[in-house]
Image 1 (tube, rainbow, N blue to C red):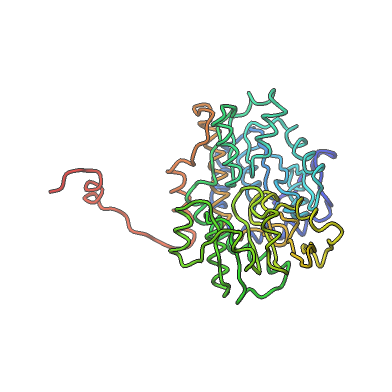
Image 2 (image 1 turned 60 degrees about the horizontal axis):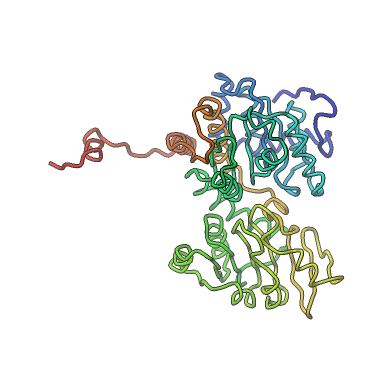
Length: 424
């Protein structure tokens, strides 16, 4: 990567001198991202995003850096801001600025700075958005109606964001098309299940250094993220209880061998509670009143709203202290609970997020979805779309190729059989 200068005042990061460290780590992640590397090579030749102003609101990690460099190789005039105040890797932000990509993100930034950074990125007047949680999409619709007409479309990385954007579509207020990258098979089957499953446990272990074997772990939510977490925690020897609101998912969890019960019954048993629902107040006052003394609470959902920290703070009053980095104790009614990473995404607050090999497919989807919008955005309605199936399959095929795996193909006779309703 050739470093270029960025105009002073057009970025906001912690320390530009961290660039060399960030570059080394970006290069390390790139070793595990062969699909994105193939796309970057093609983008460098074809320039499908040439001159397009692009805003990516994402976790500023080594994997995101490789996506940003791919978009840049494709000709995009890109700018980045953080999608979570605790997920930024400051050395990575510095390396991207050195590469000519403005970044507005500082790890640990307060909510005011977080919001200011979103507005700074929007000042770029983007034509294509890559969002993670829909904060930029929502802010544009609420505060920048004059910019909406120039936006070709956006992509969405996470379940929470897709939920918000589908609500906007249903309400008739969505003003440009969104491609739900989160719903691509090569994203949620792998990123949500294997990535979240491993990185959530990684964050919990780095924050606590507590043995999981033999512990009772409650997983709230049995979507793809919850499935991955429950599977990995059980693999480490924990006893797993699942809570759900969806009867089909609850039935699936039970048939997968997990105990299923209401949170009011699970909380008194829990050594750990891990939330992964995308909703608010999954752990609320009634749960805190019955929760087991010494329970450790962690969140794997996008926003820090799944654990009702406001109520927990009110219940504990002055009985609140930091025990170690990313571990805060709340004492009340003669007992205490520990909250990890301020209730934010624990895999990014206390660890490094998903492994690069999983993000390889997720960010390949992002790059190709951005290319698709550049070519076909004008043909789309103001709706939330899935990633086109042919792109999803292409990414899967590229990943298999990179892994050295070959698969069977249909013979002409087999294709004819599957396309026909008659049999001979």
